[in-house]
Length: 165
Length: 188
Image (cartoon, rainbow over all chains, first blue to last red; front, side, top):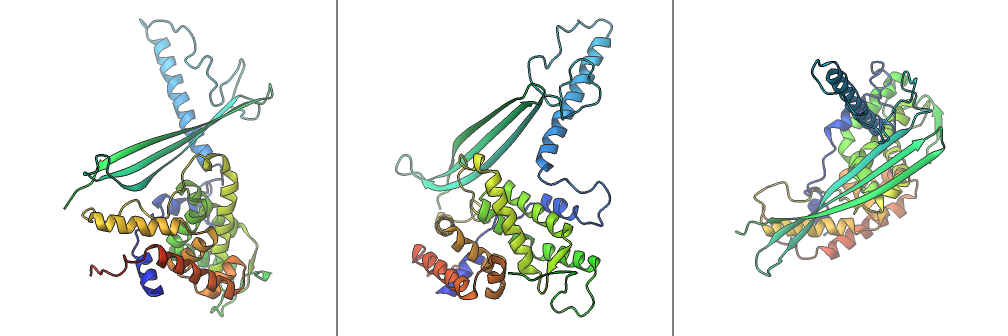
């Protein structure tokens, strides 16, 4: 009986270790080229900062191009006015100094799970999937000593008609 | 549990262990056990992203450590991943309260043509494993998916071998009860 269960368990389809894990783990080897290692725990944060930084750079380039365009209308204000963003600079801001500037960090967790078969009309089988997401946003302004956090959960139920043989 | 010493001496290796040798051994252990290590982390955190972070975190600590246990390193690596996963659990407590637990299994059988019966069998097994107490689920993962012996499991968990073995058998007993009847028909 134990062997049966072990065999059954071994045939269950495991969630595969993601390919990105290899890169993340093997890059940490001491012999890895300098700069290949990803700072721990900051990996996702850096990724988010990287995306946000890229978005800001793209926005800045757009603003510059817009302003330099001969017949282009003047902008009424900076595109991020009133919105706390990553390393948003104040007057005289030079290179980004994350230690003193307002900082907005957003992290998202999501997952999809299978709940099994459901029969809404008592006849047709549907596969029910549950999609869940948690958005966590943290905004800090070290200069003024302000810190705001929000955590927003979302959940969607998706039904997929199951084939009947 | 492990006796720590500077400069690892690996079981079965007569050559003096150098830092590079340990590094290669850790790399080999990772490549040989990556699925088992990830599954263990996922069984503890029940979150794929946290599991990935835990494995990375563990190997960063392992490669950065200047002291390692004497003997076989596999249980030591599994223990490091387990500790990192428990750390991740504490760190992500806020998000975890809103997320349902992720299973270590895929949502549906890999075969797209699997019948509804197969899908239901899969769901029963998955739910039975997910419903196990954490310690018993860890024992199942270490044994079935990590491929560890009872001795290695005991060293990983830092508990006596008889305790770990009886916990594993208790878990199998519960699974057997939960999925009673579905193991009888054979499709092969």
